[in-house]
Structures are given as C-alpha cells and as structure tokens.
Length: 107
Image (cartoon, rainbow, N blue to C red; front, side):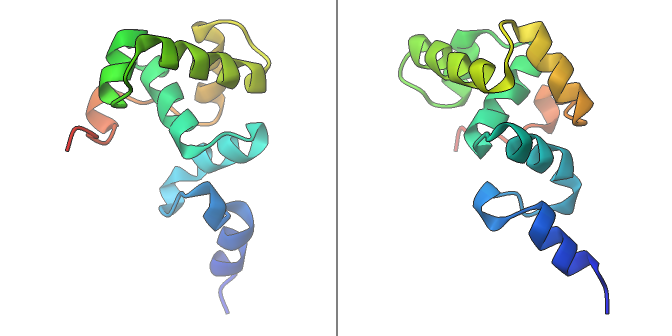
C-alpha cells in the first residue's frame, strides 16, 4: 500500500484547492499562513513584479484599490510590510512564478 494518497490528504487538504502534487509549495504556504488560493495567485503576481493595476486586470477586479486592500491582508498574514519581503517568503516555498507559468484567467 502506498503512503502517497494518505500523506497527500494530510499535506494538501481539499479545502486548500490544490489538486496537483507539484503545487506542494503553494499548498504549504497556504496552510502555513492561512492563505486562500486567490491570495496565493495574488502573491504570484507580486513575485512577477506586476503593478496593482496590472494585478487588478489579471484577477478581473474592479479597482486597483481592491488589490491594495487584499495585499494589506496578505502582508498582515505573512507578518511583512513590503513586496520584496513577500517575494522572499514565496521563494522559500518554491514559488518562482513567471507570467508564462501563471494560468490565464481572462477567459
């Protein structure tokens, strides 16, 4: 009997929303800092160096201020104040996103 299935259920709970085992870093970061999958996507855009306006467009948010507010929440959860710190923490969890690697949400 393989331990992969039971371990996967423990390490990547369904509530996190990450199905692919290669996304373990994202799942662990979500679990460690109590982040939603949208907050992880937001961090990936920050890692890519996008501005708030560009993030709002990609996440189909009405206003740039919505991004600012969401970033404040994420930064509070991470215990940080700056985007560079967010990128550093994301890198510790293996999140090295490029714009090409992010899913296109403009469907």
